[in-house]
Image (cartoon, rainbow, N blue to C red; front, side, top):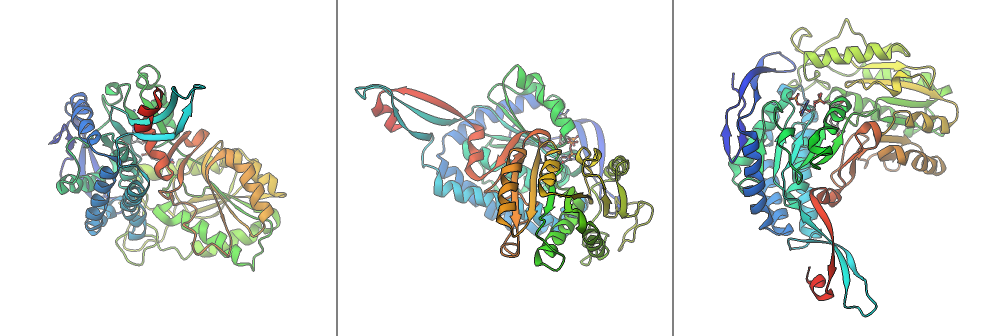
Length: 513
Ligand code: NAP
């Protein structure tokens, strides 16, 4: 069984300490091992800061964007190899397209926006020159320059490729070297893509490193100019947030954590409308893609009280067509969870939800599988729960990280908006309606609680990118429980890796900047 190595200090290096076996999600077969400790992490971070940082700062924004473009083209040529590895994570080909094609596509979007919109220079201007004196001989201007540290990223297991590339692209454009720490469970897929990146020879020396090992010593090695972009559970995020690296040494911290995303069916939607099917399709899509292991997946569904039975029946009918099994099978529409341990965690969340909810679809003890067995693979059925009381506590508190939704009734649409906010800050909320007034009040009520809102109806549904897809052009993140961070949003994310400075002096010099 191969033991994953790390790429640190410009070289592939073996780790040490305890080895953890990584298993195929569907078959339970060993895929590889990951060590608990990496070699010379602090020295390697220093190499990235000095060698990688200097190499990147020698380039202009346009030159860096051109490199990203070359890299995205190169990686697009290797997608089939990555998909083969991705099957081990439990992902179907469709699931893999969100992670792999989506991740490489994100690189391409950043490259294109960088080439078109960033200056062919090393300093990024922010706004115009501000006159600060009556005679005009003294002025001020804001500029951005790259931070002099390493952009460390710690990723969750569910997006081993997209997670790496969506954080790498803006950091690279900004001029900061990156260190990738994938989640252990699926690190072999990140490793496979990372190895191709290194083999391509496209990136400047020191501009990217890989820590395929436990995080021992990582936070302790972070310095003031470093940044940490974390994606994972709210529990880990809150433990990391208070580390001395951030509260004493002042490194920057950004978190994307878990989220109780919701979808609302407007009161204007009736069962015979196209919007009804749009609503049901979207929920089923979100439950089954990556077996619901998406931070943006729908967990709570709000429906006007008289329609709750129609919605539940439609969901059950659609979910009974889902084919669960080995993701390599072409007929399979939902693969397993990533691991047996993750299935146990999901069952625990389900049991917590069942304190307030009734189970209307799904069976913990029996599951029909295609070419697979539930002893060796982490298979689970989709589950639909109903909470008769909109204000029941657990659906607004427990994130079931899998194919589980809770349907809840509202009497007035404003109640649904208030209930959505009980998630305490989420990544995304969606609404299906044709009523502009309802749509406007959805935006006004829920913007402060969400990083992204999606409104669909029969006019735009076919073109919609969907509830759960984080588009590189649009903001990804959310307040409160969702981590309080921001990623993507096109070039908005580049400045997270830069320092804004107000420069005051002679207007001629400022003009040159
Ligand atoms: P997790 O257990 O919190 O782990 C996330 C990452 O943190 C992993 O790389 C993990 O490494 C690392 N980690 C754990 N303890 C650490 C420590 N003390 N110091 C440094 N790193 C540490 O989350 P997960 O189970 O992988 O992912 C599922 C969760 O992520 C869900 O709650 C989901 O909602 C959330 N998520 C959020 C987003 C978003 O964009 N908002 C996206 C995807 C997932 P090891 O794997 O080596 O332990």
